[in-house]
View (cartoon, rainbow, N blue to C red):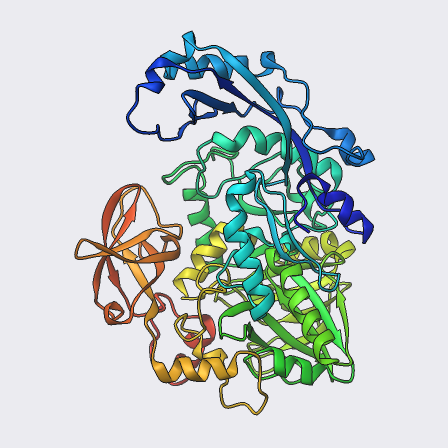
Length: 621
């Protein structure tokens, strides 16, 4: 389905609501301009962010196209409700120069020859926009064999690359490289027409803005997909958008500069996040993890299916493990936690953005190989709370008769409990790497469960924490994240995930043969763990790593480490430069900062610290 503005109508034929909307885009063409005609070579394309337009040479004249702001731009809403008029082909819309006047003036300011030029043509036509300006490319969850390449705001320029990308994927059974940003399954039932229209209005004008790290865009929010705690927490924190959900990034305290203040440097959240980090390391914190994707899998072949889908062994009843689905070429398609709740009945959990991406892969495997299983997506009906920190056990123990002691409820075990009056599936796992549990429950019980935990933790000084603190905590523990340290461009061995990959298990899981070959050949690159000596800026991921005046790799994610008061990052570098102690440089905002590969992790996880303590060794925290 590569249909431009007809994509929505085609989707409707099989019951899909593609979140696309036509936007009126105008561009202006001038007659011959003597100064342009006299040029010996073609002008480069100019993009002016302040004036919000692009300008290029068209024969001996100029062509320029502006992007108006939210208030001025125009959507073709009627096409969304009534469909594209039959027979609409190369027709155009009525042009409207008044709407783009301020941009024309900005262009004349920048390129004075425009002032004398005659406008010979004003073209106004439809451009299809998705909510985030990015197209949707690939197979679609929930329907068999339906592939899309739709929502291209910039049209034909992408044709060759996308055609090759799709045909490779269709032929090889996996994408040739990672383009998760374009996954059609990043949208879902929550991307309503109203949402799509609000986002397209915002995105059109945002064509020419500066993109900040940790950027948030607020149109169309909240969607109809909110956690059970949203109303309770929304005024207390800065929320981030994750696959339709609102999730707390960081919480406000009296005296904080609140709100969203984007910057390339450390900004208003920097100290509050340090405070939340300390809260989890020294006391106990609570985090809303409801956006996780959650699936239940059961049926005759459930164990067999998971054994062939995942590189790790299938966990025993009452246990959980961290497992990876690999592609036939041995790349990391997904990372999930797998818990066997009852014999043959599993709960699978993945990151918010991966929900339908992962579900599609699992469903395809089931269809292709005829497994007898039932898969239910329970993402929207289940809430999740994370409770973590040294006092986590002490607080939760007040709410249940079940023994939560280390001997009785071990790390990576899962069980059904009642906490206060709420039924939960409790898993002893935490992405903070501290003592903690994830508590899965019915979304309508979220407020009651949260309130009971907060009440029970008064004496221990319990408090909230958000995803920014979670990221700092996981980086210090050396935990990898899917989409950053691993994806469809990387294999689990170079990502340092060997522990979770059981090449000697009997099942011939997807990617097993490829991995054996990769292992035999040896690795060309490795994921390394760096400290970076910065000033007022921290690595985020995708920054260049330098050595001897050459770019040799890139960071995958980063954060300030509040424990050693230094920047931390993961990065891919060539194997020969991957030893501990190796000096490198990381480029941030055009400046190279000294970096050193260190032994990971920086901070040992709580289960490791306990194990060393039992052996009588003193662990480094």
